[in-house]
Structures are given as C-alpha cells and as structure tokens.
Image 1: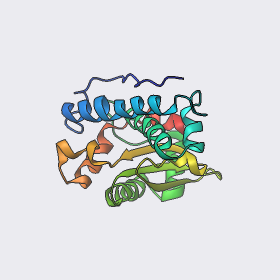
Image 2: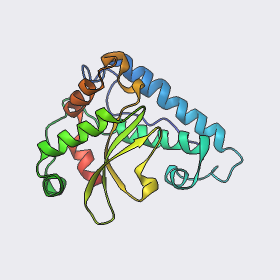
Image 3: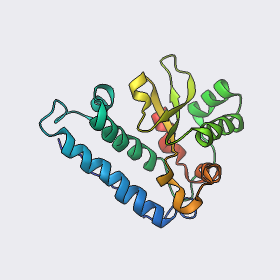
Length: 191
C-alpha cells in the first residue's frame, strides 16, 4: 500500500490569520508530506507493507509507528478546519460535552489548558472512552489515542512547527485562535 498526502478542501491561505499561508506550506506541504514519504519508505518489505494506518498505530513501534501516527494525526488535524469556522458543537456531541465537562466554556478552558501546557511536542485530544464518556488526553510526540482504545474526536497539534512561524513562542495564543477555524460538522461526525 502506498500512502499519499490527502487533498485539503481549502487553499493554503484560507485559514489566515489563524494559520497563515507560510505555516500551511511548511506544516502541511513539507512536514506532513515528509511523514508520508518516510512511512512509505519504511514499510517496504515489512509486515506493515499493506497495513492500514490504524493497524500501524496499534501494532508498530519505532520509525514506522512515529511516521504512521504522524500521517494519521496530521490528516485528522487538517481535516478539522474550515475557513470561517468556529462557534460551538451541537446535537449529541454538545450534550455529551455539557454532561462530561459542565459546559462548552468549561470544556474549552480544560482542552486549551491541556494543549498549552503539554511539555515539549505532541497533541491534545478530545476522545470518547469505551463507556461513551468524553475525556481530554495529552499525547507526546506522535502519540495517538487509538493505541489506548479511545475514539478520537478533536485534536490540537502543539508541535512547534504547527504555530511557530505565526506565533513564535506564544503557544497559548495559537491555541486560543485554533477555536476560530474548527469545522464542528466534521468533528461532530466523529462522535
């Protein structure tokens, strides 16, 4: 199986000023593409040569896991956005957020804190556990909650390459702006 960089439904400048064109060109066009290229090279002749990304996340280690998980994580991240996004979820996801966090505002504050305070590089995730409850988890490096039996709903990439060109060392400012480009219809469909 050969993996490919997924096509986005928006142009590289469409998420500005939250994520500027230059950041998209580096983050999506170079970093994401490098994970795809590396994964394709690493899986040749291995037990993962024809495996899905989900299988790679569940069973691989080392470089194959790191690159496979980063392909999956970045695809999940970039497909969570739309120009003019933001607002709040509705329907079942909104109800579950209220039940598990008290309110959307409380959830947003807790998720933002998880993203802003993750030490080093990684991801903040909203996940559904095996009991149907929502949780916020932090994953370092290429960590992916699928590996722990969770269903991913939303993620925020807090590797420096996700925000440094536009925000320098102001990760909390990036996390605060991140909410303005979310495509809640896509995110709700994952719940």
